[in-house]
Length: 389
Image 1: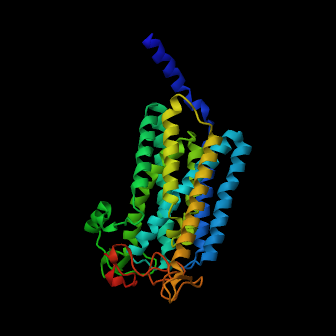
Image 2 (image 1 turned 135 degrees about the horizontal axis):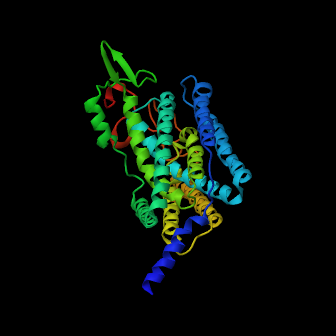
Image 3 (image 1 turned 90 degrees about the horizontal axis):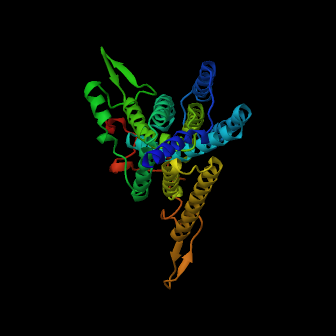
């Protein structure tokens, strides 16, 4: 009896992949898709951002809207190609990756601020950072799907990992700082590759005499790439909870990542306004972790998962905006002569109580507009001489 029960469970387990879209993708389709992604990257670099400049909020908003439109429009391609199940899995994966990427954007902002990277040079290093992220995701996705196909019990490992990650995000203080100087990969690179402390435009390497030296931009790229490994380890298992088809998982990742540069310049200085977004992301990770673990016994429909992810993300953003509005209103309250609170002007009381944050003048070399001090108490004066080599 026990052996027959195990056989039934094994047969049900092996059929769990039938709950997801599955189709063959010809090699030429992969080549064509990778060519499209590469073409979009190159066009963004050589046409839209040919000359180094600091993108305005309006420019970043327009670019973000274009990238999001491209990503969402690909849902129609998936629907026309392989039907509603494939389209639902794609848009669910896209939404998961896009929401988790917001946290990635805020980490990038702290890294840029720490290294005092001039804003007009940040786009180039992010371009190569995203190119590296696409390569990493491609490898991680195929490895993850292969593991699940070969070892079904890896579902429990991935699910448990997502639950642990969710718990860690809930416990993490929003004031926790990023310390790039503790990055072991960066330490190794600095020992091996001679470096300079001065920026030289968008160059990552400069020649001084007969020596080839790495500029601080190369150090920034190393830290960004290593941080993306951590984010990939979180996001890939999350997407594998809603799709097992490599093309769906990679395409949703690719289109979500392509728009990260514009999203960075749009949201880098708005971390405090979305203070509850991290909790929302933790709930999403916990949900997909549970979905993975119970998949052996019950498959939660992908359409339901899409609804849950959208609602949680929307509620987290709405609550964050309400919280920020209440804090702004409380900060503008002034005390009158008789000790009674008197509402101050919307722009603050002139002492910097409100309205002196993200909307302020951009500090030269700051990764986060409107700030004057980087994590760890370093000044964002933009003086290359103070920049870590």
